[in-house]
Amino acid sequence: MSHTLSFPVPSAVGSLDQYIQSVNRVPLLTEKEESDLAHSFRENEDLDAARKLVMSHLRLVVAIARGYLGYGLPHADLIQEGNVGLMKAVKRFDPDRGVRLVSFAIHWIKAEIHEYIVKNWRLVKIATTKAQRKLFFNLRSMKSSSNALQGDDVLAVAQQLGVKPEEVREMETRLSGQEVALEAGPDDDEERFAPIAYLADPHAEPSEVLAQRQSARLQDEGLHQALAMLDERSRAIVQRRWLTEGDSATLHELAAEYGVSAERIRQIEAKAMQKMRSQLAALA
Image 1 (tube, rainbow, N blue to C red):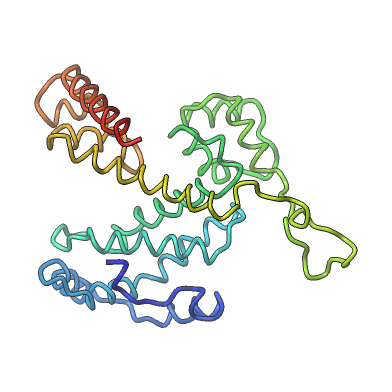
Image 2 (cartoon, rainbow, N blue to C red):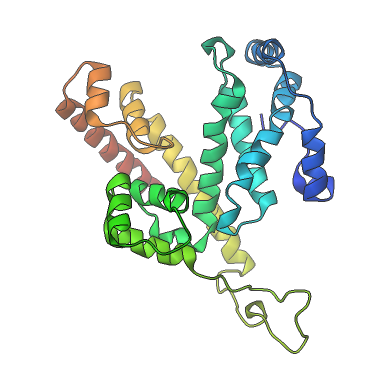
């Protein structure tokens, strides 16, 4: 869907302010209009209907993206990533479930923005587990003031998010650290040199960049091929356990769903993972 839909993006409109003004002028849809468009897209693959659904919710992406400006990434980039999540939401939206698209899309928009931040913000390297990612995205809002957390507050946050107290302290230190601009500002004296003037990226050589992109593409294709080799139940279990946004399903939840024991789910998962590892090794 993303290859055929056309809607304004910040870089194409001329400026971020113009983009925000343009999307805020797009009329909101009534519940009936939204339902009719969603049915037309689902049943007839009507891309114009999908485009209208996306256009009418671009202002939602702007509002959500604004809440992530504290991570130091460009607002326009956050919006574009959120737009990708919005398109994914439109593609999966079922109007017969009695939920408006605005409620359904919030998860997909935030998930895409979270993924972008995780991949691009240098401080997030600490957030390698789901619990730490939750800490990364929630610590700012959980603090009652800009002051450093004290002992009891650290313990309370750690307990609530399921992380260690020292992880809370380290994340707080990282989040409160000051960034150093790579490029000189417009008011800087010509005699001054910003880090960008003397920092070189050893991995920026064109052939190496292309090789890295090719490797990433092959890894992604390999994962899809490995998943395709599994039977439907095994594939569903692996995806629910390891490849879903947000909290993954537990063994007991899957056991109740499939009517088997948690140990049986664990065995199916282990066998599927072994089969996938063998497939990925063969592609390496």
